[in-house]
Every structure is written in C-alpha cells, then in structure tokens.
Length: 61
Image (cartoon, rainbow, N blue to C red):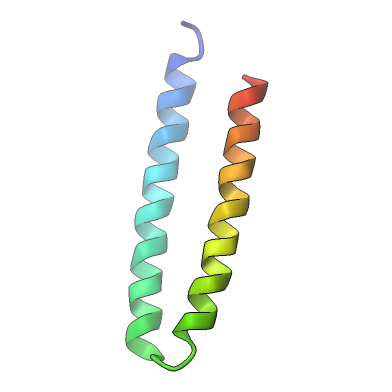
C-alpha cells in the first residue's frame, strides 16, 4: 500500500485539528455563554464542510 503513510499523516492531522477545535470551543464557551449556541451551530456547519472535503480527498486517493 503506497498510500498508507499519507493516510496515517492525514488522520493524525485531522485528530490534532479536532483537539485544537475542541479547546477553542471550550475557551469561547468560558468567555461568552450567551452566543455559544449560534457559534456552535456555525462550528458544526464548518466541520460538516471539512468532512465533505476529507471524503473527497479519500475518494480521489
């Protein structure tokens, strides 16, 4: 499998991004409890678009 290393790297990248994402969400929640609902909704939309992009990458591989 020539793509195994690339897939592992991509997976690690996704995990680190997700961890960073969760940390920023927690920080924002601590800062402003009022508009977290809206922010979470936009974040969810962002992650959905990211998933689509990653699935596209996997399909091209």
